[in-house]
Image (cartoon, rainbow, N blue to C red; front, side):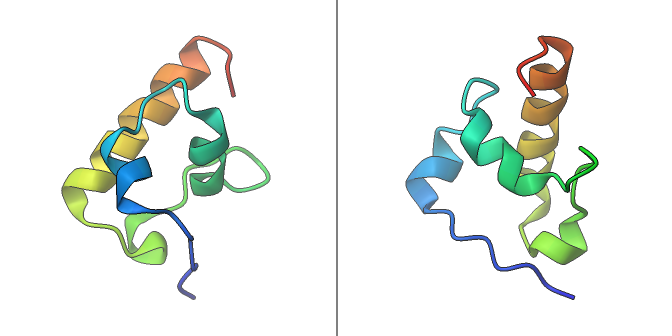
Length: 62
């Protein structure tokens, strides 16, 4: 089941741990990171998203 995420390229390029409203789109209700095969993002973008989510979790922003 593919998930349709309405994210612009500008938001993806400036993705950071501080943009929690964007990062929450890539987590489910339990806080787990949605896999790459579901979000249909490239590997490089998904790894940047994952790093940003983990950094935001460490800083208790998410």
